[in-house]
Length: 193
Image 1 (cartoon, rainbow, N blue to C red):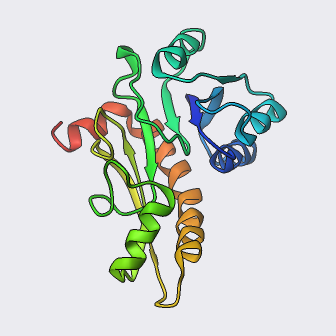
Image 2 (image 1 turned 90 degrees about the horizontal axis):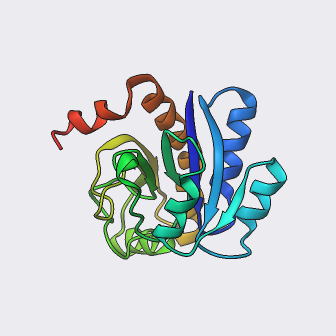
């Protein structure tokens, strides 16, 4: 079972998903701490309601100071909207989810509705999500799992976002379970990084 820190910036929908699946026994993880770079967000309120230690930290240094007090195996970026630099001992243990199929529509500036708007503008008929390890560059770390979803011609940006979030709710827990089964280094070696 993996011990997780969860970093977020907003409403905590992914935290809800993790919590529910842990409670159901379908996610082999335990949440040790939740940290937000934004004060007063709903995600921190939810973390406190669930009984997780919850903190605000405005930058990487503050986050890493908090993490020193917790025994974690992985750090999950759950709607965390800044480039995160972990402590050295966790440099290969940061997992992110991206709302598109990497290598398409990814990199600096491509997050949330920016991704879905770009997909819509291009006329894509397929989207999805990618769960991957994070490194020092946006969306470049080893891929753990991808899931696709078919788009209708009439889908607007909100409809695309909803479809993608539905598959994210399946993919992120599945990816964490795969990391629990195979170990972190398996994925870094798999792509030769």
